[in-house]
Length: 236
Image (cartoon, rainbow, N blue to C red):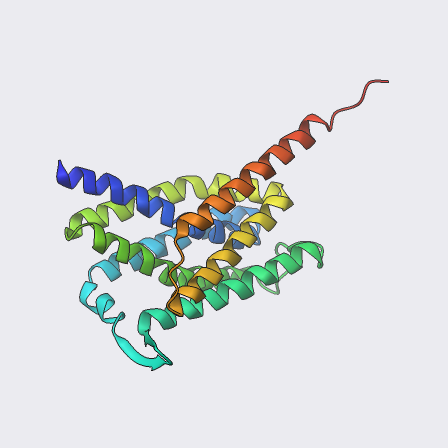
């Protein structure tokens, strides 16, 4: 019973922690030709699963990442802090760049790169890099919940299956509504700031960010629905 409860709780937490990963993967893969987007999403999520399992099987190495390497003022800096800082800066840069393309450059140019294969490879590399960053939260949460490796791996596999199931619909919704693309990118900017803050020693509970984004999403969905309902022909 205790193991089953740990499995269900950890599976739920892994799904919640994977929300930012789903959004990032969806936004990136929407830049590819439609016929290869599903392949890119599947490969990206498969990479996330592989990274998480490898890191789980290397718990001693992962815990070593939390040891102090040097200090800045009174803040001890660990390998984990450096990874989170790099990931946060990357998210801030990437999300800001995507917002600029949508608002100023006329939107993302699907398939306009010199080579689709080159674009595909570049997106997979970016997904893999963020997978490593996001994996730290996932693995540390798993370690804090249980010391049973089998339970940890099973929960992560369930979370990846859920991500794979919902990544397609999320991608379609984000692509269909530009305002939701901006909201999703703003969410990633918040995550980027949070990662930088974590690296600097300031813990920001993710629940606050999820609540703020959830409220913004609810307002935006109401706004979209009101536009749809009011978009029909008006009677004379």
